[in-house]
Length: 546
Image (cartoon, rainbow, N blue to C red):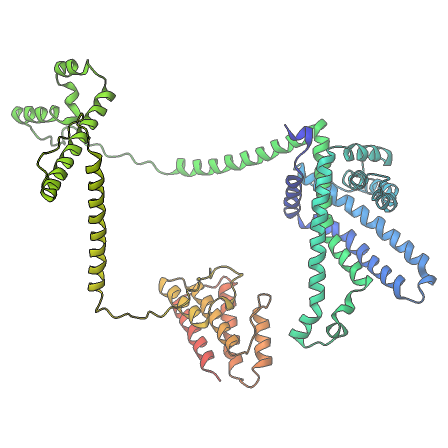
């Protein structure tokens, strides 16, 4: 394969890593975050304590030792995570982790990974290649299976780090840009949280008075920690794939995985085929009743009628190929079929042209009192003066015809009054079955009209949701709630209780509608037209209340 020499494309391998991570079992992700979350939280606490506490010097040694333990703890579980990812890639069951293998994984990570704390920052300088050093330490995590010692793991990691350098550099550039955008997203969300708490719950804080006060070193450390937890699993999976495909150059592990996948698909197809075969073979076979020759009533046909039918049939157009063709052969011998076809077409066009020119000549002779008729045979010479005169008169006729049509239309429309048609904006009808559709995408009347149409078509579940969105649009128009995509039904209920306290009859009706809607939309309850009509009557009560 071509990728065996140059490696797969960086984007292809990143997409495969994301796919493998999405399809990984929950236990695999839990293994990763079991090691990474304690380290990130400990690092944030260590950063804050060392930068702000006046007693930082007194427990610096204890805190540093705790961070070292958390770092080794994280690397151990990341190696277990990469081990499970590689088993998933190879389509194998997750490997068992006994005490001996766990001890070897812990020791190899303890020996190799702390070097990265010094070598990776140094590799950013022109001293060492950053991509190679970073790939080496990621490979040391991806290849740690508990079967080999630190020396063998070191050699394997170096060998895999030197493989496909273009792919490694391109992927690091892409993932670095992705991490930057993840960092910006986390920063924007966290900066908006104080304002959201103030807007939703009325909680006032120091950061709502001065949002820029959040921009300190602890804030940036927290954003880097969240970005690491989001992006690093993709990196670990990417390097696990690199190591798997790199080792497959010698072991053929990728071909074995493809064969296993093909075997699984074949087994599924065979099972489906077996089920259908069993169904069809077990069905009772009923033979069609064949009438005996004695019971058939064959109509009798006279010989004269039979001769007439045969004579009529053989003289049909589709059987003319059986007729004699001696005369046709004599005429066809002089010229070919294609030449004869084009000759016939040319003769027909010439006849049409001569007939048209003859009619035009008669018309011109009447107009200009010409004495000599013009011959329109192919050898006749045409007078160019007469041609120009003919062209001018043709243009005059065309202009006069167009002017006559224009005047006729003006005369026909002189008594017609201009009716002003009111224009209305055509609103696109949203997909009511989409969960992302909000009540603010149509006005209240639009939701009600859509609900009536769905109810008439028998789509009761969608009609109930349209009536519910109409009720939300009505409450939003009365400034009793504010529609937002992140709000749940209970959030709207709490907001209505807070803003509509002067209208106590609204809340029970709205709560009853929420309960009925959630049973139908999110549950498995059946719905019929009576239920939708009762729901619509509740919506009307909601509109008339207050």
